[in-house]
Image: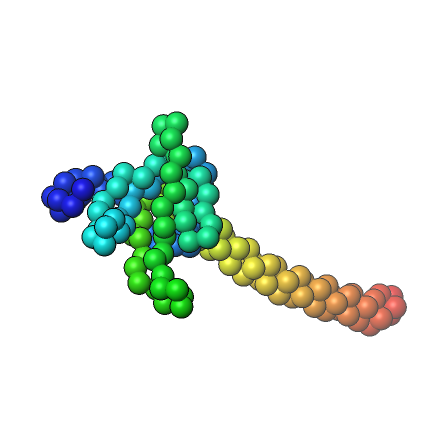
Length: 147
């Protein structure tokens, strides 16, 4: 497919990603734009299976297929990169994970600050106990011994 209007409709709910990307086997649904006969075409990919050797492997229904992720000259120079689009609900999981990691980091910062305050409080408490002992000893020596 090369019709831009149709491609935009097909990509509703999808977000473009760049490889390498953490994809889950049988859970990450991808669509892509790649070269065919030296022209760009849009394809409805399928569920990610594996990746390797500049190829990505999909499963759609009972069929398996693979496509080039990168087209190179024999010398290794990159001529073209296939564009991939991930279903956003899969992307949402990653956003949720990032949000949870942010919350954990904030909570860890709070724990560290409270640990420091607790350490200071323990130090102050120890100092106050030492002062109380000194006062008790002073009182014993000066007032209780005189009776």
